[in-house]
Image (cartoon, rainbow, N blue to C red; front, side, top):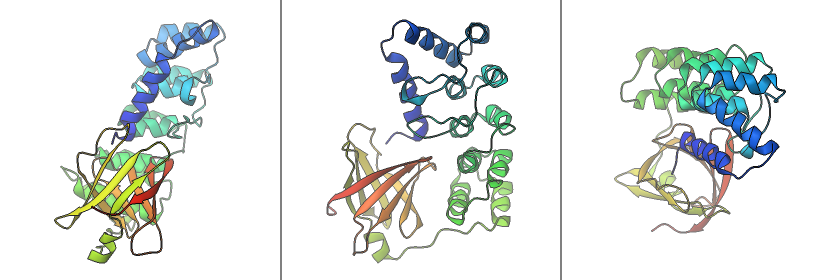
Length: 274
């Protein structure tokens, strides 16, 4: 499956590919200038009356476009001209700060932290993921709940180069390791799940580990490990911003939700385990 950041790039590209005319074409050119970091052209558009908070396809704003491409100077200009930092895209429901953290744009994230307190959950996980202590510290200012602290600690300890300062900081914040699940608890996850767009997830057990595969319009999981965070929550090993929340009262779960950053998509069980 594509990670949240790859999917957001796809949304941006699709938006630019849409046919446009008249005012739509002008807006498209403005949006493209924000993405490319053409500060002079962005200023020209703003001086001519272009709205710094104009919406494009998928609810993208000029500020979100600039952030997604790492254009710090354009970000600064847009905010100085009234761009709002609390507007979210329609796909992942992320603010510019959340997008900057997700993409690992540390300089932009640090700048935006002075203007926004939104999406600090994404800031925390991204700070841990990229090994950037100041971002992780900023994420803690959002008073993260216990499950999010557990996720952050797991990601920190599984990092290819664990940062002892980040781990120590999370432990001081009372982050607890995830529980060790029994064989019976692991069995509850097994099966195939699908959503209304035919996004499919299959969970299998191999050598004592849960493995996820998926398809239907998305890249394959390539048999990625799904790491238990709780008796009903699995983390996608390659992307700590993506998890699966399961529910059901029987011997096996009946439904699941894919949680990508701030967005949840429901999945329905469609078959037994193979």
